[in-house]
Length: 334
Image (cartoon, rainbow, N blue to C red; front, side, top):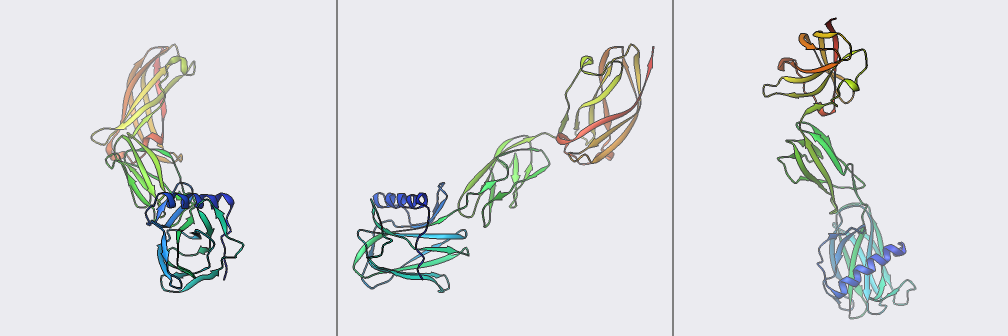
């Protein structure tokens, strides 16, 4: 069967450029990756010497599926045959290329011919080349690699909570690593867990050697809202809201509350005050009725106080991404 290289001009030139580098500066024959969208599975370290009629074998392994492109670079068009086999010896592709074949490509490196085979499985392959004369050549085996993408280039994670990262346009196992596991860890499935406030980088390495990075910022589990004064509240009303909340060392949820009195009366008591916490999906996580809170706020003034939900009533919650509201009434005197 004859399956000649049928790639775009840009792809062919990219392969030939690599072949040129090989010829001028030998590189390792081990598989390697590149940012140009190719996986280099075999590159000749030096000219491959060939004895007429004697097959020379090359073993290589793929890390993804897709077209395999093989470039053989001779000093002049040369008749040769090739056979591509699986690790078990099954012949996948074979053909004889004659020196008069019209598909020879003349480049600055020499004369190039390139069989192509679409790899349906990740695994080890064997390529044998037999020439009809004693000669030498350079061999390059490459494979197009899908440029993988990570779901997030940067994330913010609350300490004690997680964020799932994923990688698309790739196959095979992903290796995950955190640059600082004291800040954040990452599981084998890309689940990032915030440990303590700080910054680190999570790296995903694909099976074909691509590396993708996500900057991670871990923040304390603290709820914060904008602090306003009388000018930022409704006139003629008394407004009370939580502007900060966090867990203390005993596990109680301590809420800092601002009471804004935009009336001419004096507020001296909050009655039947309830605190409700809803998560990022607007689902109620916890609700607690504090009861009566004595506080004196003169007309057109504001004052801060603290309301606490005891540990026994506290539920696990990502406070950074939550909403906390107050409800109840107040007592005033004219």
